[in-house]
Length: 193
Image (tube, rainbow, N blue to C red; front, side, top):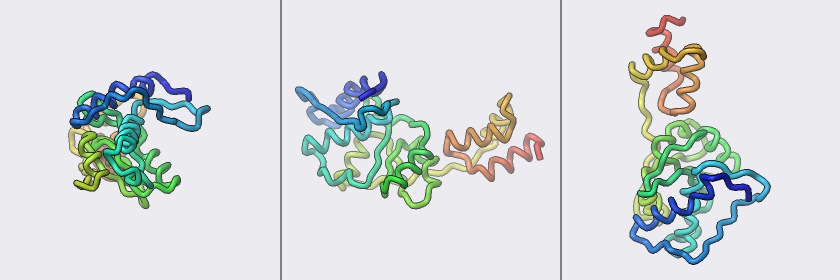
């Protein structure tokens, strides 16, 4: 119920990505229940869990492989995972819901990796995720990247929000900057002590 345009268009992305795995993906009719019906479903982040559910229902994956796991990510037509927004909030929600593992696109996973009590794994494409779900390979935790001077200089150029707001927003959105270190470097470079 109440899917937005990205969710309604997911069928094309999901089946194109599944075909790239070398699997037949031309079902006569597939129904995926996105409960509860009265809550809005937004964004393409549901592509990955819907693709995994389809693979499990088609017998390509054991249905138990999805238990206590949260999978999120938009699929490209080639099966690559694209960044999702709000990875930190998603990891907190997953932890509260009892999920033990969350799989996110590699570009979004570092942000969620700061949450204790839930294992965050990074994936680049549907093939990696399906191999991991089948127990044939491992996914890695997010790769953390220390802030670079270019990151800090770019933050210094942000107008309107002030340097602290820019650092906080970037650190939360990108999930690639250690906030304390970014603030220290920004103070040194921008002179905002």
